[in-house]
Length: 88
Image 1 (cartoon, rainbow, N blue to C red):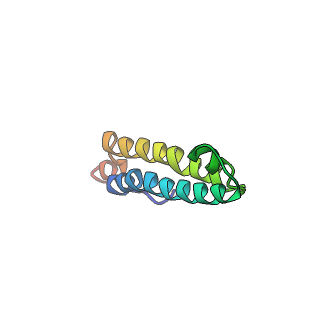
Image 2 (spheres, helix red, strand yellow):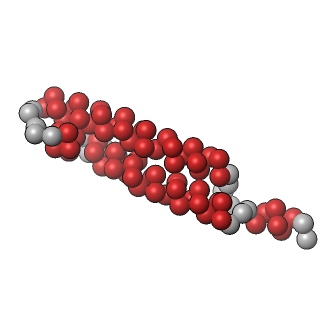
């Protein structure tokens, strides 16, 4: 079917996606702030000028973080069926 990730890999994704999102947001603020004077960080980030700038930041965190968190919880609650199926 596809590559299966264990709970430790999902937990790492839960921890690292907010950090990556913070880096993306910082870059968006610097790029947007260089284009003009804005009142706050969010306004400067929204005016970064790239089609992938702010939407990519929002996709990374919180969207990918929520997906990783849900997948991590699912791995903890419902263990892999491969181990159960091989014992029969």
